[in-house]
Picture 1 (cartoon, one colour):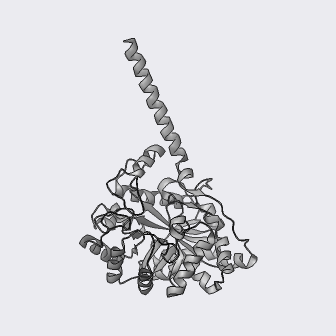
Picture 2 (cartoon, one colour):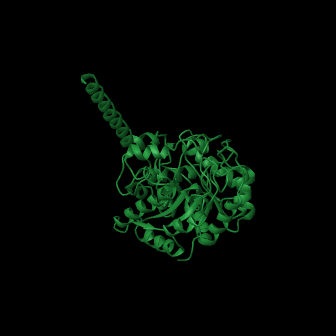
Picture 3 (spheres, one colour):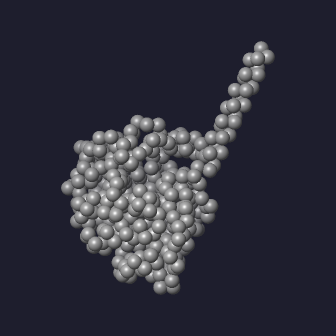
Length: 390
C-alpha cells in the first residue's frame, strides 16, 4: 500500500509538472512563433513620411487572431496590434485565420491527416481553439475581431461592403488612428466540405477565402500537398459562389494546377494575399511568370510577403526586389502588401515600421504613383470590383 501511494503521488506530481510546462509553453507560444529579428532599416525621410502618411495603406494578410484574443493591447510579442497598425499608418488590415495546420507541415509535401498543431496550441494556451471544429475556429476569429471593434471607441472598424469601405476611408482621412479590419480564411477546409457553409462565414463577416493552406482538401490541391491537384467539382462550385457573394478568391498556397483552373473560370479579380515570385525566390510556394501574368489579366493583386520563404531574405530590399519583378513583368497595377505577419513567421520588422518600406521603395527608384498603388490603391481597386455594395 505504501509503495502504491508513493507511485500515485509521483504520477500526480509528474502530471502537474507536465501540465505546468505545457501551459508555460502556451503563454510564450506567440513569442516563439512570431519573431522579429531586426534588420537594418533605411532612415525615413520627411518625404517618405509625407508620402506614406498621405497614402491609404492596406496589408492583405496577418494571422494575428489565431493566437491572440486582444487586438487593442500594445503587445510586446508578435507583429500586429492596433497601436502598431496606427504607428505604421495602416488604413486597412486583412485579418486571416488558419483553422488547421499539420504538425509536420512542409513546403513540398504535407499530409493533411497529420496531427493538428492548432489543437496543441489551443490546449497549451487554454484557448477556444482547442474545443472548436474547423468552422468554429473560423468563427472565433470573427468573434475576436468584433470584440475588439466594440471596445475600440471607434478606432477599429469592420469592412464587409463597399459602404463600409467608404466609411472607413472617410474616417481614416479625418483621423489617421482609425483602422479597418477585413476577415479572411486561410484554407477552404474551414467550410467542412460544404459549400453551404460559405453563407455562414459570409454572414460572420468574411470577405476573402484562400482555397487551400498547407494540404490538399475537398475543394482543391495545395502547392504543399500530396496530390497537388487542381480544382475539384466542389471547388469550382465554391469559386462561383464566392464571386456571386462578393468574397475574394485567394490563390495563395494553391497548387499550380489549381491556380490555372481558377484563372480559367474567374470573372472577377483573383488575389494572392501573401507570397512571392519565383523570379526572385524560386520555390514551390511562389508564383511562376505565367501565374503572375494570369493574375494581372484577371485584374487582381499579388501581396508580397516579408519573410524568408516568400522573398529569400528579411531585409526590405528583398521585398522591393519581388515587387520590381512583378512591375517589370506586368506593370505596377498588380502589386500590394501581403506581410503574413503573425503567421508563424520570422520577419525583420513589424507593422509599426512600415514607413521604412516606403523609404526603401523611394531609395530603389519607385515613383510616388507606383508607391501609392503598392501601399493600397491596387487593393482598393480590387475591393471596388468584388465587395458587395452594402
